[in-house]
Amino acid sequence: MVCGDTTSTVRLWEAAGEMDDLRGVVIECSWPDELEDLARRSQHMTPALLGADLARLDADVPIWVTHMKPGYEAAIRRQLAARGDPRIRPLEQGATLRLDRAG
Image (cartoon, rainbow, N blue to C red; front, side, top):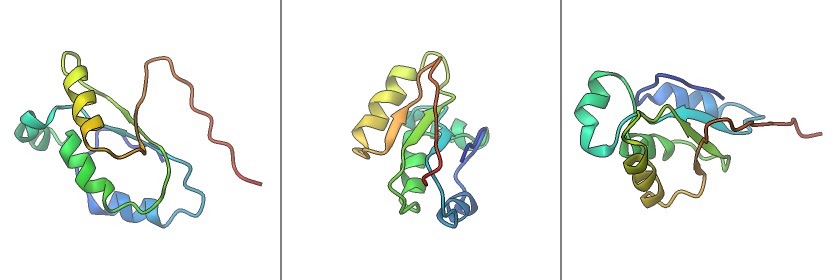
């Protein structure tokens, strides 16, 4: 599942939970936690908002995080790591993801 320019939403995680073949999620996290008001107004995520949403996802799949705003990458990465969710992986520029179907 690939999501972009996303804010906190229950329906996204309901849809992900309904997928039989969910292999991973690519989702944005644009702002650090201290800019939550800006994130909400611009309909983007912070590590805390993303973490709260991920609590709705039972699947043990990688969560690749993208769309970190320039100048805030280090803070966002620290805050994501502090969440302690082993599924969360910042997506590196130039990375290639390959999600093969099982079977």
